[in-house]
Length: 478
Ligand SMILES: Nc1ncnc2c1ncn2[C@@H]1O[C@H](COP(=O)(O)OP(=O)(O)OP(=O)(O)O)[C@@H](O)[C@H]1O
Ligand SMILES: [Mg+2]
Image 1 (spheres, rainbow, N blue to C red):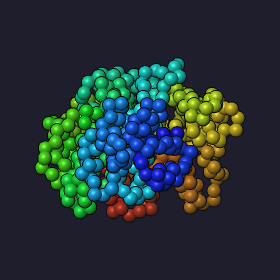
Image 2 (spheres, helix red, strand yellow):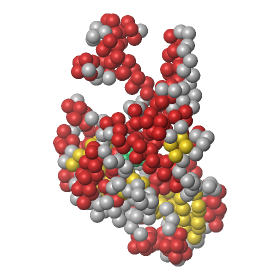
Image 3 (tube, helix red, strand yellow):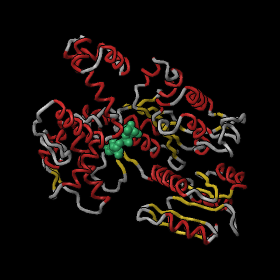
């Protein structure tokens, strides 16, 4: 459950917030003045404060200043009427997380609160990474005893102690974000903010403004000045996730911040200097992006000074039983119950599977099996069919042979869809298309005419697919 504190002297606002945040996941407390709010914070330990700027007694800005003395990381969202945005900017410079204009747009308010609560969790939840399963007092852990993970831990320890820019790489779901958060928690910046920006999730035009802020009138819709994440994160750590998706102009600006610690807001010419540690992550092979001139080479080298590569789960299968236990324990803890067990045969099946969705997929499989297991132990039948080779309960797909090719395809598609559902990031359609093309080329010894026929497409289409999926000769002959 998340704890929200609203500081506002208007009874109406308090009333609407109670209605808006009437949910079992949120506990809302209210204070009618800055003084009252400041007195409540140490007792309440809220995850997020929403505060009016204009109040009787000490105003929002002064209250924010004092909150910062109590707690450097507590997230504060300020609320202000349109005419007083200058004060809101002032507040951002004092370390407010965001501001909202009154009157509120309720969906926007909810979105900002949800994002802020995620950011608060990232800052608070300590991510440990040493073998910690014996002790129970961890919140989140990076589990792994394999040689490869020991190497990751070693690097992580070295990197955390320094201020070096770090690049975390690995397939989707391997734990890159977890590693980034562990670096932060074990660094000397742990008491300062940590902010994450997902470069792939933010539309291209907005990313630069999100990172560096913008001046009023910088582009259509920029009606007020805005402070970006780099400025907000001064003295802290910024996590640039999916950095491979950044456009060249943004890459240039990032390079400059890394080199000189300076930048300008979009549409501005005032030089702003910040002290921010950058941790970046990507699941794209950046070397290839550099070769294809999609990613700046100089930025790549700058980021690649320290690189932590997390191998996929199928290359460190000895970690699977450990992870299974860890997930069972965390599920039990979240539900305040004793952990369920798991049958040895089920663990064996999990160890054999190739885990295209890596650790995230394993976590989802365990969560799901935990729900559907009827007894106190997870059995092979509680796992998806493609893992056990049985028509497992989780996939609910019949494995009875079907009469024709079309229904075979339908059955296969249903199974693939179950996989996609568990891991939407898998991008199932292109992934399957690519694998089919590779398979056909292998089968036909690279005879494109023959391969195209097998796939039911023209040779021209096949060529386009080979190009699109960058299927090179090496891949074909493997
Ligand atoms: N070694 C590990 N120990 C415990 N949990 C892990 C480990 N690795 C990954 N996880 C869990 O798996 C899930 C995916 O991890 P995370 O989000 O860090 O992956 P990612 O590499 O950032 O993926 P993506 O590229 O899709 O963003 C999370 O719930 C995380 O807690
Ligand atoms: Mg991630």
